[in-house]
Structures are given as C-alpha cells and as structure tokens.
Image 1 (cartoon, rainbow, N blue to C red):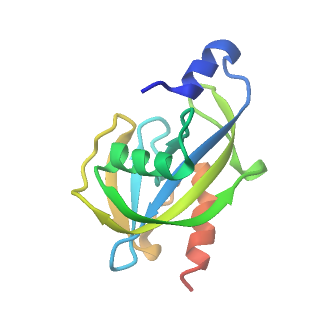
Image 2: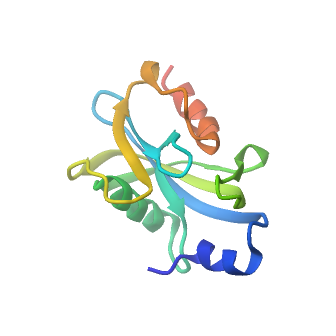
Amino acid sequence: MPNYIMDLRKYVGHQPLIMVGASVIVEDAEGKILLQKRTDNHCWGYAGGAMELGETPESTARRELTEETGLTANELELFGVFSGEEFHHIYPNGDEVYIVDIVYLCKNYSGEIEMHDDEVEKLHFFSIGELPADISPPVKPVLKEWMATKV
C-alpha cells in the first residue's frame, strides 16, 4: 500500500505537515485498554496511524488496528477528533507534524492479539491505575480525556 506521508516527505523533508490519522482505543470486558509500545520512540500508545489517499477515517482505524495488533474491530464508536498545539509532535527522525487524530473506541473486537507490524515492540492491556508513565506525547491528552469518562 502506498504511504502518503512518506511520499510527501520526499519533497518537504522534515518540514511540518498536517497529518490526519485515525486511532482506536480498545477496551476489554474489564475496562482495561490495549496499548502498544512503539519502536520509534519506545513509548506507549494506542493503535493508529495516518490516513491514506481515498481512505475514510473508519477504514484507517480498522486497518491500523489489524496491522498493529492482529485484532479486528467488529464495532467502532467515535470518541472524538483531537488537534491543536498539544498534537504538535517531532518524531525521533526529525519529521515534524501537527496531528489531527480521529479516535474511536472499540469494545467489540475479534481475533488474537499479536504484533503484525514493525512499529510495535509490545502489546499489553492496562487498567487505569496501572497505565505506564512513558505514554507517547500526542496520546497523553486523548487518554486524559478517556480517563475522565471513567470516573
């Protein structure tokens, strides 16, 4: 599959881009969420990634979830659209982005958890009280809002 953002990088280098992506917060029956440790910054986050040309946000979310975790979303519920200064991020390789993240909740999924992507070091379900400290910066504000819905 083509990679729109990486193709743009050939022309703009590390210059800031607006990157539209879709992500999935997977919740199990006990209310724990699935996080993945990323290979690029070695921080934890949820499954997600950049939209490709012609994709809908929901199809991006479904694709990224399967690619990164092996799970299939049976149902997705829109959680929110997140953007702004808090979502400015510079990747370890120097690529700079302003992220627009369309985040879905998924409580109904199927499949077995397994890493299918070279972007993922580990996969683990965490309860709210045991979330790791090293959360990827663009994920922190979204998880903070998600946690607020649990009190």
